[in-house]
Image (cartoon, rainbow, N blue to C red; front, side, top):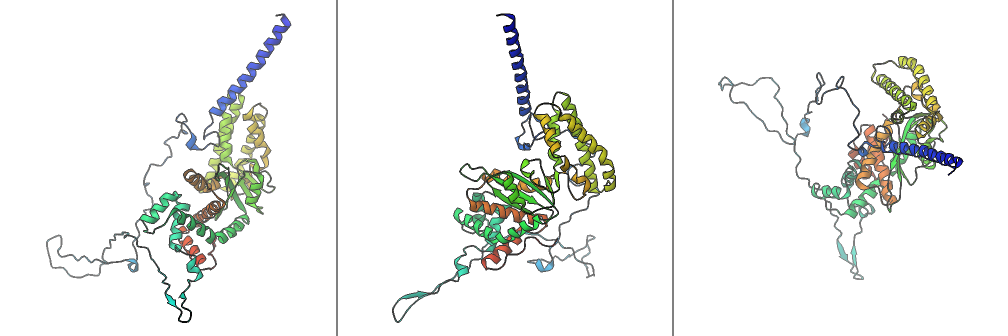
Amino acid sequence: MNKDAKDTYTKQLEDKIVTLEARIQELERLLGMNSQNSSKPPSSDGPEVSKPHKTNKGRKKRGAQKGHKPHMRQLFEPKDVTKFVPHEPHACTCGCQDLEECNEEPFRHQTVDIPPIKPVVIEHVQYVRRCKKCGELVYARLPDDVKRNVFGPGVLANVGILTGMLNTSKRKALAVINEVFNVPMSLGGLSNCETKIADAIEKPCQVTVDYVRQQDIAHADETGWPRGNRKKGWLWTLVCATAAVFMVHPNRSKKAARELIGNFAGKFVTDRYNAYDFYEFIRQICWAHLKRDFKAISEASSELGKIGFELHELTKKILKMRGRVRDGTLQWKTFQYRMPKLQKRVESLLESGAGFDGKLSGKCREILKHKECLWTFVKDQNVEPTNNCAEQIVRQGVIWRKISFGTQSDRGARYVERILTVCATCRLQNRSIIEYLRQACHNHLNRMLAPDLVVNV
């Protein structure tokens, strides 16, 4: 082999080494991904992933805190007491038995129990009569509302609580209905109950969708939702301060995002997912996601790692300051005064990080594309820097998915959308979910208007 051939071969080997080293670095990055430096859930972390170190300084001990406000058990009102049992004293601790009445209030102690539940059964008896003229047998027909109903609003409401709020599997929910409430029901009957519930709350949920879209601030998020027959799907949510709505959609795309937000034109808080990039109004990018991105960048071995480390530390400082504004220990004007210097440093570091090669530096370039969406929370105190609101709301759907593996039909998807909307909205408004479901099902069975899901709060 002559000298030129050797040089060419050596150059090829050097190029291959560079390529392989880059590939090894990328594979190591992928292997090192966890919930702290990516969007992977904490449940996917292996035993080798250590939790963030927290010092004991400033941490509260478990249990009741010193000086906390006591939460005493509230006694039932006398009108709600089923039975009174009097206890008269007969002797003093000194041994004297000569006692007289006084004006002191008696002490009250109550015990609460739940007796075996006996369902209310209404039997409609259709008497049969024979026609004297033609001899035909005639019986009274049932009213239309009775024909359509086997289970009343109480049964429907409890089915909604079990499968929609508590995420109980259908078989376990059926066991509770059969054994606790003593109501005979089949799996098919349970599914039919869910359909009736979905029909009962259809109109209030549609009104709630319009209500959320009219608010000044809203959060959005999405999570996977299988739709049966190995079809992929997504569960989307749009959340404001007092209501939340859900949507099951086959795609995770801009089209689905547009369908979710409709005519919403307020301040929009989301993660960096590009399906939301079409939004032309004011937007806030979630800093909890940015914090994980900066954590991933900080693990790079080059100078880029130092940039990521400083970005991660700055993010923690910014979020801590914003938290102090929320709990009242830092004035809003002081926060705004301190932020410009931090903003300038963050943007400078992002521009420096964007000059490197590789996917980690690509995160810096992607974040800079959303530069105008990074600081909305600095201008408006009502806008949160994170999308935790939507992520906490959609968590209910995540738990449901892990138990039931999604839905198998469009009918099931509509039930999921509407029952999750009712549960989340009632929680945000501190309303009783079961009482709302009971009233909604009662009105539906009696062909009355459904009660409002969103009330003045």
